[in-house]
Image (tube, rainbow, N blue to C red; front, side, top):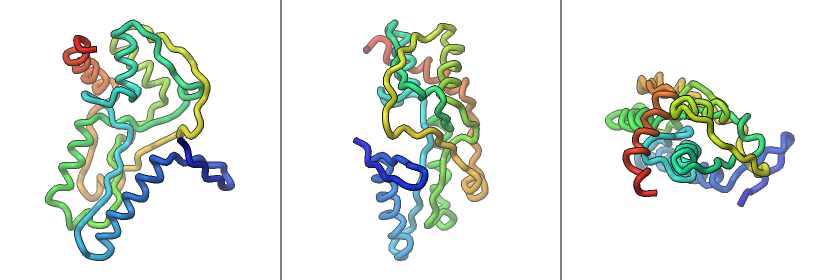
Length: 186
């Protein structure tokens, strides 16, 4: 379900986005009231071992391992994301611990500064598995974000956060994990 909020630019917001913003503001309100130290961590396009089954990289790996066709929404190949490997996100979350005074009341983006199109993500997966992925283009869906880019200037300044995992390195690790843990199960 998509909640449509029309503005001058006809922007679509999903209910998930709205829920995230409301939850973030509820938590940050406690900081504004000086009732507790809080911060909000925004995670950008996290991938890696144990990624949810409906997420892109898990679906790409599964389609290859099971010799199936990967369904891609029309136009999605041109969407851009700051794909962030799970270990880099964990490093960011852990860096908050013990630094509550520094991050109190802040909204902090945990992501990767590198930005890739979905097509580049698919091509990276193909390079890792050394096979062409069979793709079926399906009708465009409403509400898909064209671009989500993590601005991590604040977290770099406050917590010296620097994600280290390249997209190809992360995709290799996720593929190895999948093959070791899920290929036999699914």
